[in-house]
Image (cartoon, one colour):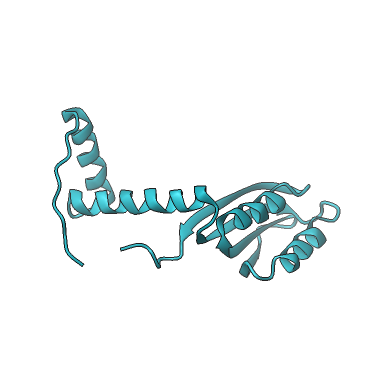
Length: 138
């Protein structure tokens, strides 16, 4: 894999702000930060198209006392056996649980799973975090 150099024209103030942020985050140089931004752009595009194989996590905080939420969570996880790789369940306190579901599959199907899980009655907060499978990223 070869390295290609290219030039980018940006306003000076934008570059100064960018440099401050990449220094705070610990990047060695601009090139590393720009490569990460490009990878993120590619991964987001894969998710938007819906046809690529992607991976991600669905994180949910829910009240296990809420009627049927636990049963519905388990039923949905069984329904999507092909996409759900694993899950982690943590008891936060007497009433609240944190569940992290690890998923892999077509982006459109993963979004469908997340929408169904996060919209369950009893889920207080949740988020789908998306990434790629790593196959297409350099």
